[in-house]
Length: 378
Image (cartoon, rainbow, N blue to C red; front, side):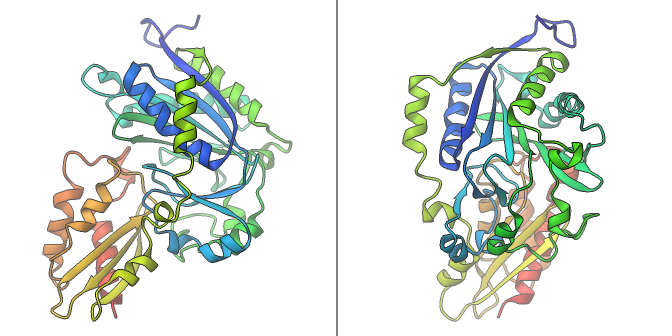
């Protein structure tokens, strides 16, 4: 039995190999497992591989800024919005990308899992060992989260507070997807690659197969990650199956993520359609450390009557960005100091969290997007 790095009794986690999963099944599995962690107080590790090609919209993303939904429907490409989890809109082709997640209980009884940055740092050696086992020695963990090979993105490892639990997880590109299909339905913001070494999407995305020159299977990644958890983190994994209760919960929740209301949770087209008659509407992006997007509706007196904030970000809790946008309602559009004060009141509150905040979204990033949207309002 492997020992913990500090010589203490090793942690025992439950481990689930979820194997091939479709987007509905996967999205419904996460809340069920988080609830199990909350109820039983035992960390869970899980791995899976996408079994169906689909587009996966981030919780905070403006779906109309990233996808042509009509073209997705015409080409039969399934679209879902993942619940609570941030980041950008992702294209996952069947068998081309695998996922993993570590879920931890939170609260006063579990202080060892309280710090998101500490959790993320703890599992960097696990990811390093996983990469090395697969022969991916040249791949680096950059900016605390991205897995990159010569500036190209292979995957990511991130931490997030998801209300009932703390999580560390990510994705890993195994094989090349059909990027022609993705580019036919995607709307890639002009400034998406502003800060990237590699500017072209076809070159930006890379896969393990490209790096090592031979196919890398889900099973190879899974086994390397499991071995690294045991050797580098001192974790003892209790391999198990989903319980009957968990399977029922997954079946019950699997239909929700693909509904129109969920997919259009943040939608610039819907925002514009719902703006009161006679009000000016504008949208703008701002690329700081992450891509931020704002939309505003301004009444004839110059007051913000509605606001929308979106983007590629990992922020907790799940309603943080919505509440920050709501704080702008009633503000004078021409008063930057008031706009910043309203944004900061919510976004800089103690309950709003980002792992490695030095690389996350700032109030000034949001303000820049809002001011751009005000300037674009017509």
